[in-house]
Length: 90
Length: 384
Image (tube, rainbow over all chains, first blue to last red; front, side):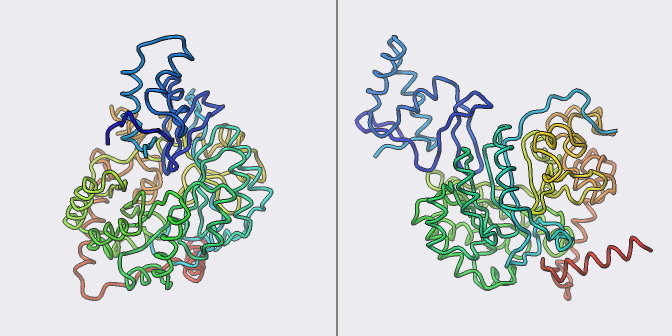
């Protein structure tokens, strides 16, 4: 599975993304497992909400953090997220 | 003696709520204690809600509703709803018995996240024999309903000598039923399985063949079905890291409210496992003798104490050490460094002899009658 730049990304219905107060971290929950996320991964995944294509996610994050040149890193992460089944494209 | 020795206590992450020891199935490898018939009281709905709230506040996030059969509790939807409000990721660990479409919808609306369905074999005859209950056809119907209503589904198959030859068919069945995950759990020999070990333990050749099939299947279905293969530790030369470290991650609450660092820990002597009716989860987790007993390495004897792998496997499984060597502070005899390792070799050899014998003794099925008989015999032998 590879990232398709023309398709909208949504978070997987088979996983749950949630903030954990005790751990002070966002985590992904799924059957028999949990992934602890760092802040940048969590920021990316929160925008995978079924309304944005990959490049819009990049633009929104660059704007939010007043920076540029994030595309490569974000696309790399989205690729991993797709392979792990955390996100979907339809 | 055992104790803290300045080990930092980490918060619980996984809570296993064993709601009831009642179960319509009688699987001869059941992980419930042999004397479960003695522990027949069940804590109330309010008690469970308090336990869920307290554990969640400490950091528990993965929650399994288990048993016995958790569906025997009429308040299950209410507990699921409470768990969802607290932010748990909750799992129903079920035989499927008593699960119909209305219940599946009701639990979904209450906030249940996923369902783990057990199935005993890939054929009706063998499934119904192992479960000692006609249940195969119903399980297949339930599996399809679980997927129809959008749950992630884990199919759990316990593997032993009676079904290991079906490995390929079991995986085909899982794929056909739309399982997202298959747990191929090689039998762990505690409780009922320990009693039935000679009849359940496959030969090394059978294990190797089955594992090769499972590994090949893993690649074939990589994108749509995840396979968890739980290894048969009797054929390893290092023990498993028991519970990811005692009192570090897992908390089990038994039906009568007894808190256990592992679901088999009831078998261990002198732990004085605390009850949620007497203590808060915080007190139990942080202060109780039972949860501190195997934290850190102060409890270790040789060869564990000076072993350079002790931070990797924590001395292995204490229940196994107790059942097979008589002392829970010994190294897990699965370890080839253990002076008791010969008991593992003897167990494998004994099972092999049993496999080849013409008149094998019958399986001891998990039911109240056999549990009561066990309690009687045990009390007689103690009073002698």
